[in-house]
Length: 442
Image 1 (tube, rainbow, N blue to C red):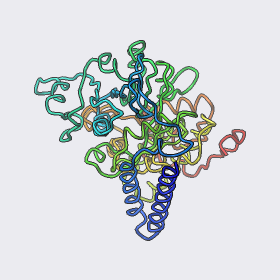
Image 2: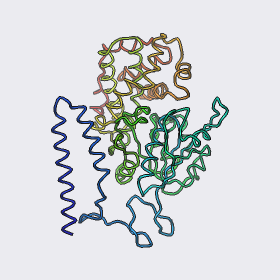
Image 3: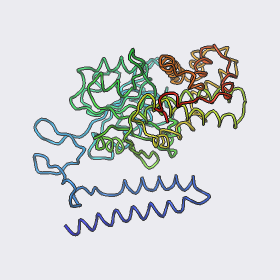
Image 4: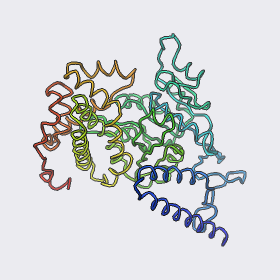
């Protein structure tokens, strides 16, 4: 027992010392580079350490299977008590879905608590060659339409049959355009296993008569399961080639254990994931930043300059925070400083698809529609910002808040042609007074 306690003490001391030393170094003029190296090194270091649950007093001992062997805490059991590995299905196969498949497949193959095979539901398409997209993915281990040139992992199996793809899975990863989620969930009712856990990588919301419904809540309500979220500064093509990135898993109260399991499933040395107990805050950040990215794109398309773009991003972040806290009182200010918050906003306004198409829209003076530009520029991918701007406009209008959020209101009116793209800066003389809403947003 003393040896176990000593091991644990040394491990904690080593981590604290390592973290302090690297933090001290990162305070120098090379802050960004060394902070990134710190996160990268810590992630690799933690991956190399053995589990401590069976080595420290006061920590629950490992579970035992019916044959007396130990199993990991995140393993599942069948009805006869035999240990069963967690099996993952990815619902979606676009650009981000394919990158998620690559991340998950690498860990499923490496970690003993996960089933090797990772199924990915593919909305079947016929390629210009006449071949089915699913067949090409399974033959070449590559999504040639949405993530060309990147191998997904030999343990990724593309499946065009939604029900068949999910039938044996106890972990579902949702990553489709948000407007398709409700229809997909209705197809899955009664088709999934009991006690399935889900996570949404989807940035957007559904509008209901009673108000906005976050995608994680929609999944939970339709399927009767818990749903975490993963958001962050995640341009898919950069992660695909293993450039360093971070993400945030949002989870609900008393769901820390499953959040850690999702962290384990997604984390790699180049993709560092952190859990935060704030589903609504994490998801609102991932949803609303696309609207601000449209505004940044208008600025770029009209060549207004970096100062203007920085101002738009700052004002956009302020409105994101206020809208989130007004709609969901549980949202934490600290969430906006995670990867899902300010980091995601920055990268989306610098290089995301919403910014790119909005810039083209502004260059054409708003004469070409977003639908036309999307079809021309995105090779089948979908914009989220335009529909989210419309949905948020409806929410703000219904609640009488439009004047409080001039940036968000202006973006939608520009998108539908009621205002010219240059109007994105014309509201800057007005500074909204959020205190009028009974101090809720203070």
